[in-house]
Length: 325
Image (cartoon, rainbow, N blue to C red; front, side, top):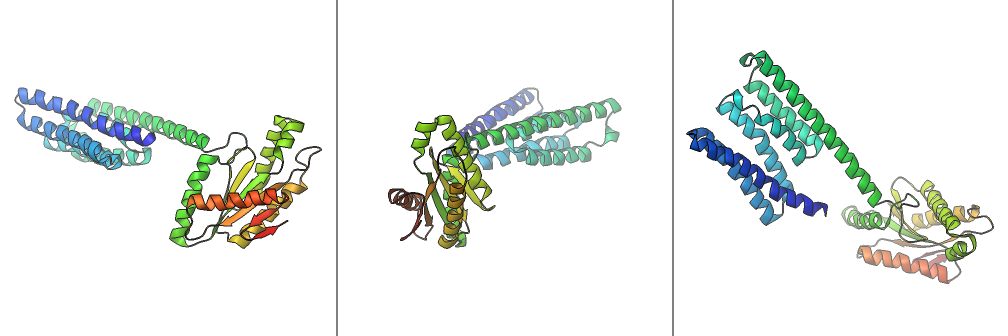
């Protein structure tokens, strides 16, 4: 959805920019300002070309940076070729840069553009009131644009966190797990480092819900997630992928190390009084990623091992060709 929105923006925005600047070119041509008209028409056609390029190739990121380059260079070239009466183009360029790029890049290019203005339009060439008016205005424009961009960035970050976080437990959700496990497969193939999956399920969780109620059941799930989280290394990640199912991605852990981690977690959960009057235990399947694994085959092996553990007694860990009670 976000990619489609970015693509649509970079098709429509250059068209609007091209028509607006091209319109100036037509106006100046009619009024006999040939050089100005040619300049405007070249910039306008450049924006239209960017729109066409984005539409036919889908490479909106390249289109953004090319548009940003024109947005910076265009006004400066105009000031260089003509005179400071066209300095008002800097105002719109300052805003557009924050619209095209992330705020850090936009801020850097704005500073570059302002340095160009200082060089091309020295303070000695301006009346004091013009000088003061320009710099106060451009400072306010950039400041408010930056504040808006920072708020937008924070909102996007918060929405992304919400989209990949399990609302009940605060650990990663199924979507986050899909991203993480895919990256783990790529990482394994690039760096040839071990990585293992620990697929975990709370034993007879339905009985807890039925006998104690869903509120107590939710509290038990939350406590299990908290216990797992406190026992992981910095390179490990835990995700809730079902009602009472969790998956741990243990980066840098071979089967032996992952088995030790799983046993430590199983023992800790069993030793805790998570639900009054109920003994809470977990079963696990542990699978190390191998060279010919895909994400689906890796997950399927861990899932199969988990259900082997549950079907052969529960409160145990099942690994490749080995079960540990």
